Image: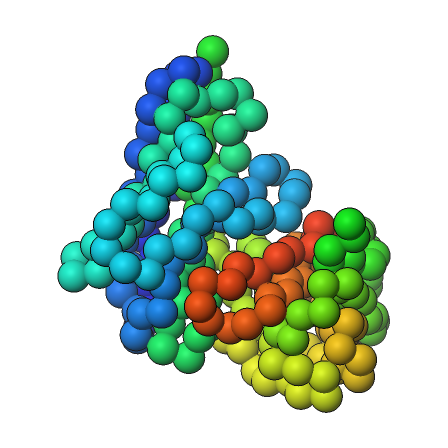
Length: 109
Length: 114
């Protein structure tokens, strides 16, 4: 079966750094996406990784290791507006996205 | 900048009733998707379309039907609603299925079946 695992909930302090991990087992791999979803809103695209390594985009970075079936999203200089759920999704061999249940990130002042 | 628009935003149905959820995108995207999102679970694909006039089943298609008569619209139908179909439904679109093209989501339809 196909499986995406992420922690259910994480708490961090404003101004700090947090790393959200994602491990996956899928039938094939055609890239990994990270999305942000504020409560009651639509998911919005954050990052895409298809090759091993780190992709940096402002305060957000995403890392991929295909051999380990592992990715993380790194958020720096946390702001209160970063309180949201972060969704990891893997594109399988059929070019369909398999989604994790999401990690709810709580930012405390 | 409308992007992906879903109607209605909220709906309450009684068991056995039928309804259609509407999705419209103005980005000229070929690919469109319907997902449901339930607490503690990842988004699950119901049906998708790779172009006007085409539809295909996703992971959880039972109890739903879809149509894509026009490129910009993707309709999701519930023929006989059941309480298990209580969920938040998201429509999404993308320009391609691969190559890192992200899916763009509508704001969702919150559907309750009593």
